[in-house]
Length: 277
Image (cartoon, rainbow, N blue to C red; front, side):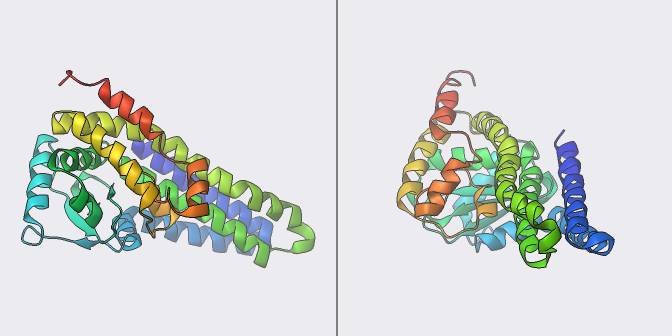
């Protein structure tokens, strides 16, 4: 199902860019935009993990760099019957985490320095198990492609203002500028909200209890309000809680178009799982 979603999104990106290219500059520009879309799709598939790690300024760590973290990830991934993912640490002080990679064999689990410093062991296990669940269900390629597609829609809308035939296409470009950001957030939200509930449940099963993740989500939400994080919106949509929540006007906008379910709903769903494992 997720592979079908990826194919649908990639195809949608190409069709959208070809149509907009044709509106902006006719057949020649449509071919140019087709080439750009093709390169973007290949890049999104093969290099999504590197792109996301760069967004967070994260570094890959070895067992000698972070032995306790590495051991925890290794133990939990065995419980989840997954290959060992790449482990990375981002330098941000806000506690948060994300997973990326095109498939389980190329999975990446990244935590922030703030998460390691502020979460207790059970909470950290819950968060890591949640990220491993994303890898297990192959959510991350879908989310990364959706985020890249959303970014491309906005980018193309902006290009239209500068490169379009203003006399002929002004109405089209104005509509793109108004509707593209909304369409972008809808694309991401449509995929991410269901995935988060599924990853919460599977993560609780991997950890053996929903309590660690439920407690972590409660605390992560509070820290995100108080500790800002510098990361672009595409990367922010992959984190376990919205990292831009406390970033002033940007935080308000991302809250309005949140790609995650309300944290209180996620906690309530986790609490309903008590005693089931």
